[in-house]
Image (cartoon, rainbow, N blue to C red; front, side, top):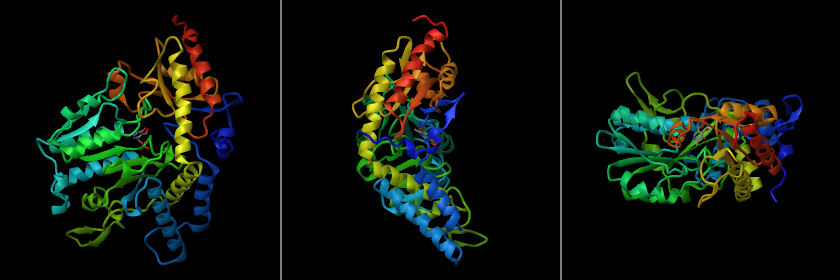
Length: 421
Ligand code: PLP
């Protein structure tokens, strides 16, 4: 039995909409934070706050220690060494950092060692039709800037990837394959090994959007065999404003930076600049130190629960949620009920004849918080003939009761709007 951790999350004790208990099912957008994370951040500000990597006073030293210890802990959480983890403001910026590094190299920046990242006409970048916009638009822009061509692995009618297209879409011309580990709409876990094997066989660099996997599954970047991975603290019980880019050290040391400023440099003259090695070359400016400390506290908290247990809890919730939804007349589940590598605690649904915002309002009125709209995945919705959906998504604090409350209210939606099913 997964432990009931709800009492660790102060926000979950509040009521909403005229005293109703909160049923929080919007964790795919952002998760709630346990005391352990809130206290870690408060402790940093109360006792150790100082600027990192500069200053000779004790607080600067303590802040730098806390920042670098947090880096080691978050890196260890994904099975990586500390010097392969770059702090970023979030996953979106992490993915942009990689794409913009390729763009800078394509402009001739970064010297000889960056040439491996230079793209031009005839080169191809591959994504999937399931991507969150954060892992689609940076690659579209990179293609537009360099003359490379963007291609994608399509989705079947059930909203899962058409792996049979791997051979024809990923070819000798492919330089980058960027794809999500877990869909933020269907919750389906991607067969990373299959995509990495094909990408490697043609010498392409792989970029994994691990935003919806690191918070919910045991993730080892070394075992997955990808080259870069991006994730955000706020979806894994940590604070907003911080996330990480993980990259293989040889790649990070060669990738040109694309955000410039203080602290990331070796020597600056009026004519030119030389950069520190990774990860510091990607971290100019004042860093989100308290947030990094909070992210490490979140990793410790999740590690304490055990990521295998977290994944099993999420799979259990997903099964109840998805089977329950698939049995409600007039409600369509986006994606399959189950999948070969699993589905996490998410269900996005479309209710025949009712706009997702209206579905969300009925749920909200009963104290149930969900996400409505396209969830930053317009191509996926368009492929399935939809403009949007209503998404329930859980986390470690989500209970079977939460899921049942959602299903119960969802079942009333068609008749509430006079839709006959
Ligand atoms: N990728 C996926 C799959 C996501 O679900 C999200 C957030 O919703 C992102 C990327 C972007 O993450 P962030 O907004 O934290 O940068």
